[in-house]
Image 1 (cartoon, rainbow over the protein chains, first blue to last red):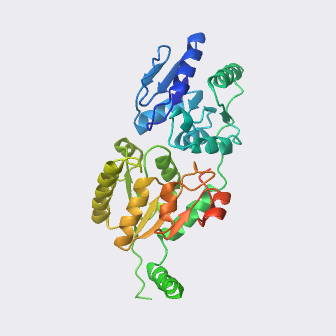
Image 2 (cartoon, rainbow over the protein chains, first blue to last red):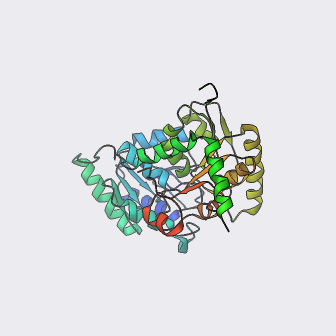
Image 3 (cartoon, chains in turn blue, orange):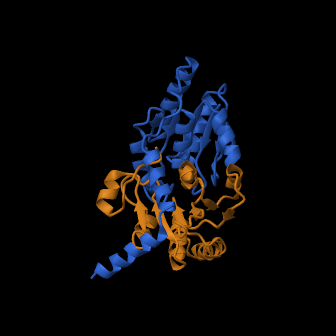
Length: 180
Length: 155
């Protein structure tokens, strides 16, 4: 099963219609999409506008391939569950987002072994064809992507949470006193 | 020493739904031992946490000024009820507002910009630079050019 998700902020018809036209040519592959606010006519895949956190997780776990906008929730969950993911970044010029930061996210995340980034429907189709053919030979999924920078960040937050407030306040005053 | 009192700090963890929430959940081990309250914009997220300390506020961004006001009022109410010692946010706009409000009541505050912002700080993080005790970027390059700190990343 392919699970597609586009988040909830703005419509993302480029991804949905691209996926729909691919599904039309590949009727043996089941596709389920969380489609957000889209009004596009989608006839070859099952869709739902929104998914609760638990349902989202269930679909994610059941899928063998994820197709999504370059949202960090999706990218992190894919890394955690070791799912291959095809990302089509939203573009501001198509009114798919307020800015082009998904372009940056996708570019940075393309270094992850489970991530494939595509920029248009044609590339999406090629990536889908390739991913499904890989799946047939069952050589997908490297397992969980182990984060290396997570533990230091958690330590910093924990230290901040448990820091002695009186000490921090004293430092605060000091800073104020020395500032011009 | 008899004078040393160490009760569990009260933490208010504020994040929008989606990726912001996912990142907060990844960082949740940092709150073990503390009294943690989650505030987010998607009520179904309560299914993912065991705590009953769960608060919902309306989503908003800089393009929706009226909702932003309602969001701020809602967060003010949450901050007043929770009285956090520490506020940690992974964004977005609501996180900045909570930190701004929390400062008024003396909370210590940390804004962790979403890892999605790989080239620039988000608007919320930039605003937080003037308010929060710490603003963290998850990208060393972004931290270096903005005055935010790099201390690690969720991936």
